[in-house]
Each structure stands twice: as structure tokens, then as C-alpha cells.
Image 1 (cartoon, rainbow, N blue to C red):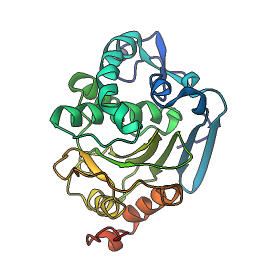
Image 2 (spheres, protein in one colour):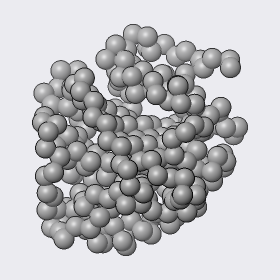
Image 3 (cartoon, rainbow, N blue to C red):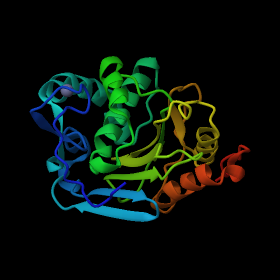
Length: 271
Ligand SMILES: [Zn+2]
């Protein structure tokens, strides 16, 4: 996997697979500025780690200008726009620091939004994309995250307004190619964590990696929203602050590579 060439031009829509022309999809949806107060939202930060190498991209332009040419007009401006406006109703309160009740419909649209973000975000570095095209086409057809994907949330309180971290596992369980990514991202006052495996046999809800990441996330007060929201808390967990947030990717990397610490569920600290 070459981390040096991120300028590959795409010809086909990453969601439906149709040949372009492709239109610019916002990395962070453009409505977010209107929710959180656009003048403060000037820091869009992107980090990629792979094989010990970290790439850090601070985008010094208003976040609404950060776009990737990855979607056709239909997927971006018709299907995507319609979905975004439904998602906004459920996400805006979370981004403002509220903790609304999550029912089945809310769970599905919030998971749709996080999946769409994660799939587009992977194309910040197209040469490192793990998710198969087929999985994205199924997402386009069903609006559901791919099998094996898990999505978590926790309120966030800190100085980052928009930020995302993307970590690629070189390969776990001896796979020939990278087969899992994790993403951590903040939008306003909510942090998301996405576990995105690509191999069918890793797409098991009970795989060791998935299980240990889950235990570590519970310890860090993240709340699962996909595939199940049955453990969703009525009361918001305490917000994650910057010091803890900064360590989450490393902790989850440990949980996958050296799972012994997390084979057993350790409850969150009392305070
Ligand atoms: Zn398309």
C-alpha cells in the first residue's frame, strides 16, 4: 500500500458504481456549519495512520469547502441530500450537546450518516481504501452499514469542532491485505467511532477484534448505536475531553493487536 499518491482520479461513483461525471461531496456535510455556528468552524483536521506512519492534514480553509470528487449527481444531490436532511433532524441536537432519545428510526439514520461519512472519508487517501466497492453499492441500495460494521457515540467537550482520525490496520489475523479500519471523528459536541472490517470472516459481530474493541469502548463510555442500540443510555455519558480523545485510536489499536487486556469487560471508572 503506497501512502504517497493520493491524487488518483476516480471515474466511477463510489456509492452506485456508475461512470461519472463525479461531483464534490463534502467531507463534513455543509449543513453542520449552520448548526454549530459557522464562524467558529474553521478547523477541519484529518489524520491517517498506517504501519506506524502518520499523516496529518489540517485544512486551513472553511470546512464547507473541503470536498472530494467521489459521488455522481444522483448519489450526492438527490439521494444523499434527502438522507442528509432526515439525518440532520436527529444529529443537530447531538451536535449541540443534547442527548435525545434514540428509537429505531433515529438509530438507522444516524448510522447511515456515520457510514456515509466514513466511506467518503476513506477517499481522502484513495490508495488506502479498505471497504470494497460492493459494500458501498449495497449501502447505496439498502442504506444500511455493511455487515460487521459497528458504530459508537459519546458526547464530546473540547476545542475540536470538526476532526477525524482514520487508522488502517496493516492486516489482522494474518490477512494478506489490510482488512480493518477504525475512524474517530468529532462534529460539534458529539464524537463517533466506526469499526469497519472488510473481510467476510471478520464481519462477525463476535470476532475477537470486534469484541475487544467493544469492551474497550464501553470502558471509555462510548455507547453503541449500530448494529444494536439496545444498550443506549437514557442519560448521556460524561463527555469525552481532549486528553482522553487523543488516546482513543491508540487504545483501540492495542485492543485489536494485543487483545488480552480487553478479553474481559472492565467497567468504566466511577468518575
Ligand atoms: Zn452514484
